[in-house]
Length: 257
Image (cartoon, rainbow, N blue to C red; front, side, top):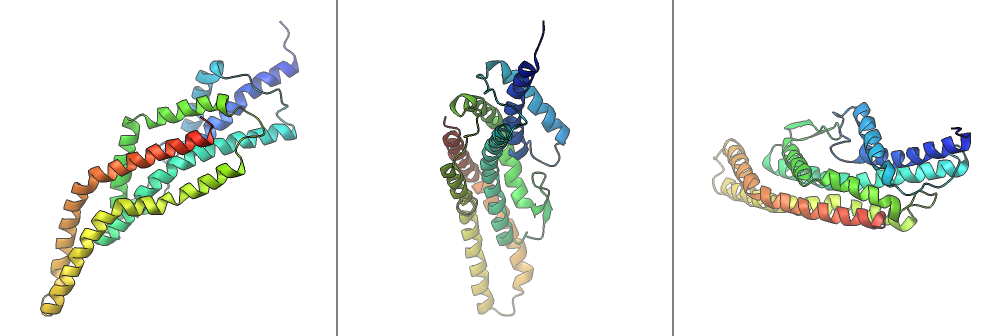
């Protein structure tokens, strides 16, 4: 059996372009994109997923990979994968923003650790939120749903030089404001409660100036903050589930599903 060069390039391109889309999604997607996960692991997962779904994918366009049109197709696939993963990153970023606000209100802004997702220093309260939400995300099979949506996107948004349009990018930019609005919504009950505690200590200080409010206020604020953190954690996770649902709806809009 003789295989021509054109047939070989067509077969390779039919595998490479889905690999670009899937690999870009794993690079930007939470859990898989953390610095603790080696790049070799992400590459192996991308290859395995592409090999599994390759037989069920629709026919790929007959475009020369090294041509200008082939480069544009590859850039479109990378952009689609990065955008889908970036949307989920925004959801987890709202938890970091909420945790920073709560930590500053509790007086734990100085207690920080390295975030395995981004590699930067974040408060420990934000890490509690992120780790709990990550476990919830994996239990809900959020990563499998992302892969399923991406597989369907090869039918609804076929491989071509015409992928994401300007309206899709504007929708993504509008969604990025959810970092502040969603994070503020999560942290507002706890921050408001701690604000009332601090106001009460301020009134007590004015009434009794000889009272050493710093020696009393910090332990009380810390204890009440931990108690309120435990009480409000279910609401935080409910808000996270709602944001995750909205994120999947936006991803479906971008992928035309």
